[in-house]
Image (cartoon, rainbow over all chains, first blue to last red; front, side, top):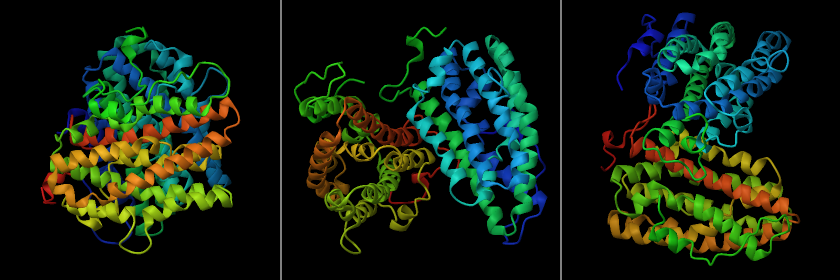
Length: 266
Length: 266
């Protein structure tokens, strides 16, 4: 796949030489290394997202994305609580905002609620989405891999798994623009993305500063890069599952949900 | 997808009424319920296997299957060791043969070794396969989900996750026939499947007898069925990943291995 305008906009950073040596990378070099991984592996390049941004997805395919990604969304505060449980007090004070961002300050607030509003905007029943009953098994397996990524292995790996937020702000800004353009019926449901614009920038800055400061060897810096790769893989595999089942070749797994058959506003 | 001759051969059991009630199922009813799940969800129906059995896979696609499924094979004694760790002495005495079957009685023996011989027969380097470096992330996520399936939840669920062996014997018998017919260059590498013909029948008989005896309520019987479904899902999702990346539409994930570019006997 060639690089599209979207990709160029997200990864516009000047090239920095990372080097093949074994020495400790500078702040700029580590950032460049992470951006190089993102440029190749972040899910902005996935054919499902490319079709989304080009306005080529049907309403049923958008519904499939919203429903399956809900399973990812509801996992975020769970994985953040696990990370929280492994940090010290200073770390916890900085990290706990993530749980608040997604769970809100009361019923009817927070990122998960906003995602449910997006689901309702595209014609899905809230209870059906919350049940996670119709999540594709392959999407579920990908999301579930987030738990060992933050539970097992060094704490640096757990923190570094959030570094996709280095890229998510720009992707979300572009996505909102494309959604308003191509899927105007979704425009009332974009509050999740609006909130993430600010949140993800703050989160990315903290996480990068933390891992840069706490990685004392090149091996630990490589661990950070590997964690980012694993996180990119689990995002990518979710879209693989969607594309395979709902776009091309369109083979639903046994028991897979058919959006067009259930009158969910198609 | 319609039911092919292969499917009919594997699921030739007469229909038994399972019933919608909440009462305890008889031995025959439970077996019928499990066979109904298999008929819909076991991976003999997956398009990747259908193409394999029709002789339509290229050598590179067979290599991709062997390489990716190695990751599943090497997980088998790990998951069986976890199950072993949760049983009592009588259970362990019956279950431990599974670890032996896969690990063998010394270097150069056992199921994992046989799988590596299959890999070499189709032109893959043993070390490359053993490294698991080129396993598709989505296949890895599916296989990794085997660990919580046998570690978390009730012990009955862990044992019941092996019940796909109720169906594997017949699938393997047919596969060997089709492989000899369509891929004669593989014929010298089929020792794994030959051994499994006997092993899987013994294993299935023990596991079914165990779960039937130990499920004292209908809820526990439903747990058995749910475990079988989850196991079918993780087998199916591995083939989804292969089909998506290597057959149609053929979108490799970032960093995905291209079999045709590496001179592995293609």
